[in-house]
Image 1 (cartoon, rainbow, N blue to C red):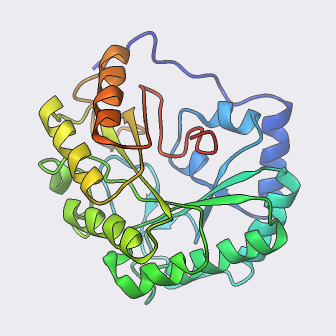
Image 2 (image 1 turned 90 degrees about the horizontal axis):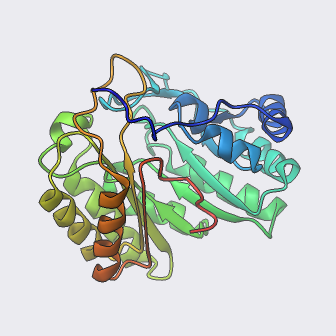
Image 3 (image 1 turned 135 degrees about the vertical axis):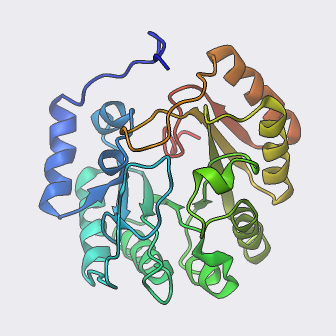
Length: 280
């Protein structure tokens, strides 16, 4: 399907982009911006922000919409990574950090301890910085969720990705629609004051009624913020786009979501889960 002319982004260039890139490279850090081929990379990096991806760039799961490499990391972790992230955040001079990771089913704790250590390191070194974690599902295990909640992230984000009917086709078999809802509900039950957030992609074959049902399901968990964006095929081996939703349709979905009681519904063709996260 041909991409509409209005769906365009700038190539990553500029002095601030180069500065961010240099700092991240010096501390040997990866970003989901690059690994997932995010279309907003230029805008975010030129504003001095980035979503830092911990625990490597090899994911143990294979979702059909994602461009991140898949494989078995063999239990490898980098013990000094939390400290490197904290130092990089200080040099980047950002006030809001989004911290994410690949899925790490090869680890006993599924990566939750690395998240907790990194949140603590960042906040100890940069007390003024707010931290949003964009996490895997951690199997929705309460003990692993509490481990990270206790580290004090300001926002916990986890993406539902798509509607219930399409989830088995779009996501890895180890992920599930219900598991994602359980994770978000568990975070709220452990820490009602923690802001929770989720996101979904449009253009994979879903209907409007299914989107509304998904928003209702998210709201039932106590989810505070939702992002809705257009799926763009990141590489040929990923799922093709089934439909491009219009800007007017995104705006209408945002209005519907806000009627449900979400604090904010950020919807638009180029919206991604971490896009303008601090502003939201």
